[in-house]
Length: 310
View: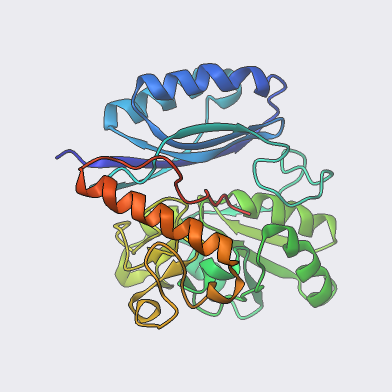
């Protein structure tokens, strides 16, 4: 069977008519049998789509036909199976939520560093290396010596920086995220706070894994992705993690050995936090999914909640 092409994309650009863009874009994706999730906002576009080579290329061509998106970049990987249940195009206030409306990467942004130059930068002992992702992402992989902010959402990142780092002391800062989008806002914020030299990985971890040979890599572990693959390894193939459908966090073989793991329902990370009503609903959902699988049908009644890059 042909491989499914998975494309992550984003661009900060003013889209005054983003509301009017939704239905035509959704129709284009549906015509090409593309699935995934795209976010539209006044500040730009963000998301991941997956489908055939022809279909993905057609959607990218449709987007790039808009002069504002003519240079829209993307990162590619692939899988043997479609990693999304359906296609969604959502309207948002922000394409990645920091909660600070005055932060605009179109006005000021940190210096982009190509993957080929990243190792040299982060090997400098004077550079503060920050992982801008959330705790569940950092837990399964990160760059050597990177600081884990231990945040549950991107909204917490500004407070983490403000409470821990003085611009007068930390002159050089390098940061990274999955595809590059969070770093654009994070770098704009840090420059606003007075940090002098702020760098971020161009294209994010996904582009680094694509461009840098594994034998030269400083990446350790796997990279969390926002689709049903859960994580990818250094070859951008599906990794070793699955997803807990109770909390949407990655789980490994060790989690599954726990007495608090129940397939499709809960895991050791969430079993104490779920109500009886939630547990019962998740058990019913799992039952319906198993019945659909036995009938060789795709269950779309109540899929797990989608987790965007918070």
